[in-house]
Length: 318
Image (cartoon, rainbow, N blue to C red; front, side, top):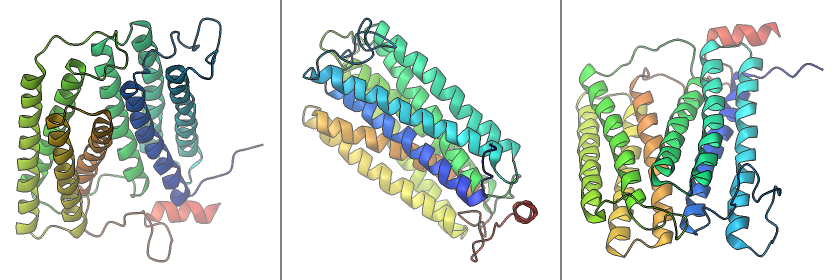
C-alpha cells in the first residue's frame, strides 16, 4: 500500500518534531555525563557483553545510559519520518529531500561516534566531537524546518548587506562560543565517569577564552539589533534578533553563575539547554535576515492555503 501524500503544512509539523527530538537528545546526553553514567553501559552497541539491556535494573548509571540509547531510537524515527515525508510531500522539493537526507547522515554518524566514545572510555576529544556534531545536525534540522515553511527558491532579502554581514559574524561567533565551551567541558569536571581522561588545560584560562567569545557574540548581536532598527528592517528579522539577545543574556547569566558556584551539575545541565537554545536562535536569526518582510512563517496564507503557488497547484491536482 502506497504511503499517503503529505501537505506542506503537514510536512512542516514533521520537521518540527524532528528538530525537537534532536534538541532533546542533546540534553539527555548531557544528563548522562552529569550523572556520571557515561560508561554505565560498558559495551556498544549492546549495553553489556552479550546483553542489549543492563543486567541489573538497580544499576542507576547503566539504566540512565540505556535510556539515552532508547531515546536515540525515537530520534531515528523522527529523522526517518522527515526523509520519508520529504519524498511524499506534494509537491516534492529537492531542497527538502537533500536537507532531510542530511539528517539521516548526521544521525548515523552520531551513532557511530557515540559508540567510539564508549569504546575509548569517554575520550574528551571524542566527546567534544560528539557534541559539535550534534550542533551541526541541529543547524540542519533548523534550516529544514524553516525551508519547509517557505516557497521554493532563494528569496530576495529586504535588509542591507551590512546587516547580513553582522548576522554572519554573529553565527561565526556563536560557533566559536560552542567550540570553546566544549573545550572548557573537556578540561573540567563532569566527565561522565570518575576514571575518564580530561584535557590537560587550566580550566580558568580556557573559561576566560570562552567568556571572551561570549562577549564578542553579545556585542555583535547588539550591533545587529541596532542596525536592524536603524534601517526599519522587517518585523520578523527584528524579532529574531531580539530573541537571540534575550536567550544569550540568560545563557551568559547561567554560565557566570555556574562558574562562580563551583560548577554544580544542575546549572551545567541548564547551561547545555541554553547552548542549544542560543545555537538555534542564531541560526533562525540568520534565516530571518534572508527573508522578505512579507514572508509567511508557516508557508500558508491567512486562509490556510499554501503561500507558494506551486504548492497550491500540486495540492489541487491530487
